[in-house]
Each structure stands twice: as structure tokens, then as C-alpha cells.
Image (cartoon, rainbow, N blue to C red; front, top):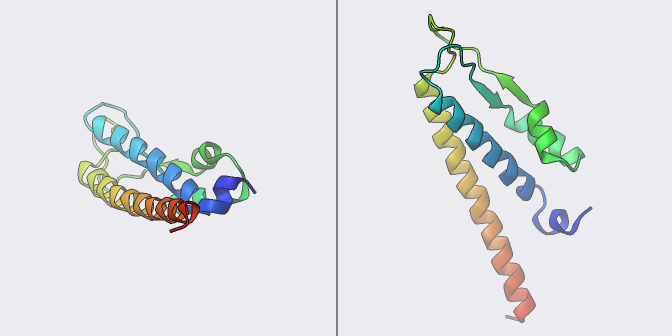
Amino acid sequence: MSVEESLFGIHGKALALRSQRLSLLASNIANASTPGYKARDIDFDAALKSATSQADVSKAAENSMGYRVPLQPSLDGNTVELSTEQTLFAENAVKYRTTLSFLEGRINTINRALKGE
């Protein structure tokens, strides 16, 4: 177990996975009008479970990535449904911020302990 894992537990890996998912969802949104673009997403729960059993968060995210099946396929082969992507992006952003706030609190607690407060 690394020092980071002992200090931050699962939250450090969760933050890294949420960041990767934000990037992937942003890419989906940016390519909403690109013909043939296939929307992808990370199964966060599966990725986090995988990340806790191995050290490489990027590998866990890659292994838990899949293509989204659209509710209404477009004629040009693009599978991005903008409203779905925007909702998932906003939801993931809130969870990212929550995890970040928890980690900031943990760091502040450690700093106070080191200062003897």
C-alpha cells in the first residue's frame, strides 16, 4: 500500500477516474455533430472496483470503457445524444467536486495535525 492510498483511501483513485470520465464525456459532447462518431463512457463502478485491486487507474478506466447504445440512432451513424451526455457530464462534475472537497478536507486535517493544532 502506498502512502497516497493510506492517506486518501479510495478517494484519490475515484478522483482520477472521475477526471478521465469528464474528459471522455466532454469529447462526446464536442463530437455531437461528427458523422460516424461513437459515444463512449466509463462504467465508473466497475473501473473503481478494478482500480482498487490494481495500481494503474488508467488501465482500470480503459478496461471499463464501452460504447453507448443510443435511444434514437441518427442517420449519419453518430451515437451521441447531447442531452444524455450533458446530464452525465453535469452529474459527474458534481461528484468530482464532492470527491475533491473531501480530499481537501483530509489534506487540511493532515496539515493541522502536522502543525500541532
